[in-house]
Image 1: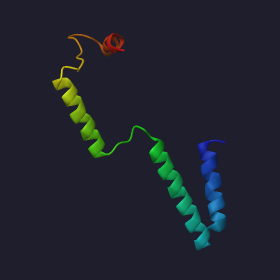
Image 2: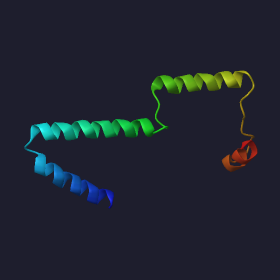
Image 3: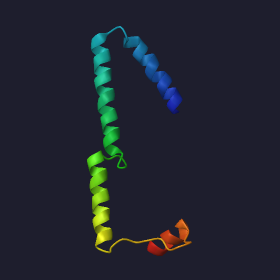
Image 4: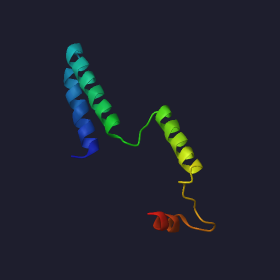
Length: 84
């Protein structure tokens, strides 16, 4: 089943209960719970504080000489091959 088909099925089912406030509240609560789970599963998301903490850690590593620089005229592929 495609995402479009699932969307259509979801809205059809919700149409059947749209006049029942209690059932709609349960649907909303469950959808919010699912959305929160998805957000937790995305490891690329971070708070501003986490981002700036990582920037500070990177700056400290560079200060300690642990940083790796690209060479002049080096392509990204060459750099990644060299350090990876």
